[in-house]
Image (cartoon, rainbow, N blue to C red):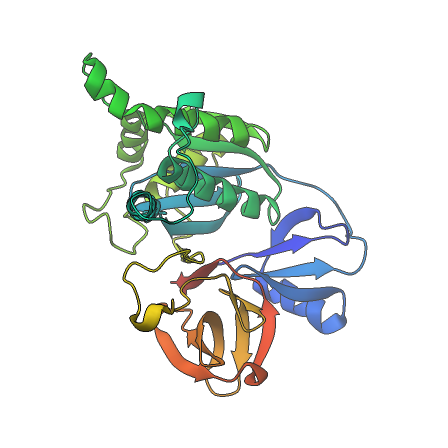
Length: 335
């Protein structure tokens, strides 16, 4: 059963409730429904009868392509999330570097090279991956009374060779940065990969070999076992429903197109706004219903499906779109 997060008038998260009880509160005017990035929540309009808070733990299973998060207390599993990792930053930075280097051979204004990594920074691709995990945790903190996080610790394989080990250092730097930021939100506990496997085996659970599958046994089984190892309460998963999250990729405005245009007129490419709408925003269209904003062309905007991200149309009139909420990822619920 999927629980409904509850917050009070001061935006403080309380214990989640059942859908039936949330519906009763809404009908009586005791609560107001709202959506928080794809999750249905209720806001109490009155003082709650009790503020008994049970500890809620987040289990985190990092990955290169898919990642998993589980919000669990001793009594219930409230939410299982499988997300797509941010994987496009490395290629985008490479293309930007190639374009900048090409401009340095032309009479085009360009900035001097900057060596950010020499000051102890992280590569943009590494930072984007760990920032994405931190965004998910911060979002969950606004819906559940979370006090601890259990993360499967990943380590770079070292061989003692300086050149080989140096190439894996961004992973360790990014991981330590993530742990430091996460400790500001709650208690952080780590488990090694072999410890996670021992916990699965002791519970009689089997993990799927298909890492790209959208099933509980692919990744959420590890995030659940990590949360349960700390908070306890169950031997087997009591809730296997999953919320799938895919981050939206926004193309920033390009200074120069990759290929020159005829006549020397540069075509516009990239931006985060489309005719007054912020891209990714949820809108309700008279024909296509609930969708999100894409690009723009010829005073029209494109709309995309929330289920799979496919483009629904390219000629939507902005006047026919009713803005609902800002959005930076798309969600879909799987039973």
